[in-house]
Image (cartoon, rainbow, N blue to C red):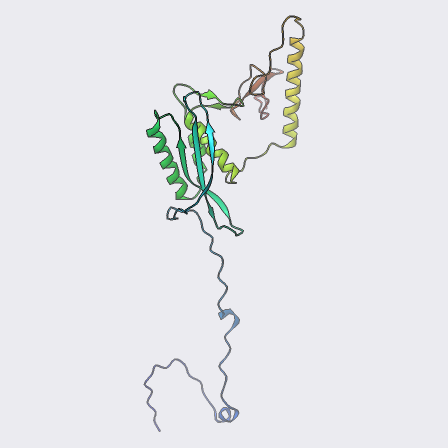
Length: 248
């Protein structure tokens, strides 16, 4: 007897007479590999399509420059990605600069918008630090507290961004090893002892007080750490801040 099949054939089995006597054949079990694997956690990376949350965390830094009558207040806000997971990280999302001084309002607003756009683009944004710190003011730079030379106000804003990126772990500053630290301490002690010996000879002349940056007066600018801590020792220029020496 012929049987007409109206539906599409999706599979078939050959049933022998002895199989009918044994009962219905159970369908083969699905292999273990065919089972649905658990979905891996989705790691969110920084990109320009990421929407701004209602609340951001951030820090505000004060810049007091002799080039400005009033202080600048730099606020860097961060977005927290993958909160509560092992992939949690803070990335800078936007920057604002406020001041009572309105003379430079136009370029400051333009700078903050460009930097914020670069932050939101994602990827490696640490290059901004070096680019900004390399900007020189044609009128000349200035020394900030600690004897660190700033070639321009833009360079100091870059230094603030660098400090913030170090705080959130985006930039890792290599620490001075113990041997270098010990060498710097020995060099500084030797220089101060030699300077004290020279000043002790005249009875009527008082030795000059240590400079406000914590380094001997007369120290010059170090090309490596940009700090006014370079002194002449044993015929060689030596930095009492980072240990740099022109003689190696």
